Amino acid sequence: MGNLGDGEAVWHADMTYVEVPPKAAMLHSLEVPPPEAGGNTYFANMFAAYDALPADLKKAATGKIAVHDASTNSAGMLRKGYREVSDVRQTVGAHHPLIRTEPGTGRKALFLGRRPNAYVMGLEVAESEGLLNALWSHATQPRFTLCHRWKVGDLLMWNNLSVLHRRDPFDPKTRRVMHRSQIKGNERIN
Image (cartoon, rainbow, N blue to C red):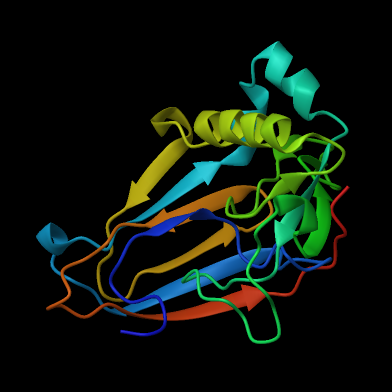
């Protein structure tokens, strides 16, 4: 059901293509597929991923700004008024550092957003792709993730600025109905 359908949703944070992304997100399950039919949601802790970054990767990411693509939606569909990105150096969207600092604690986290059409400003395309591939591969390792197996009535809330999430595909003969809400952000990522 819905725009995302029953396919897998890849790792992402919500709406990072805007200058001030939502600070948190919530999902409330109304109908869920049976456990064997899929539809689980996974979360990856970007504080833990940053803390465990190898020194060379941490150095490569420090001070770098990435463009977060605004041209497509969560289902990968082109948004009205945008053109398909054929050269990531021309990606349209918000510019955010790869490493953000939590204002209240001073703790650092990776801030990756969404992978398609992302570009690290000032780098050659191959260098940008290499850095982003290494960061994404590191950040989504099982040791930084947890899986939530939905039951009807579950309500989950997470920090959209420090957590990536994704969903498993599920059997198209089943229904998965969720209410989703976001908490407006008040932080420019820096």
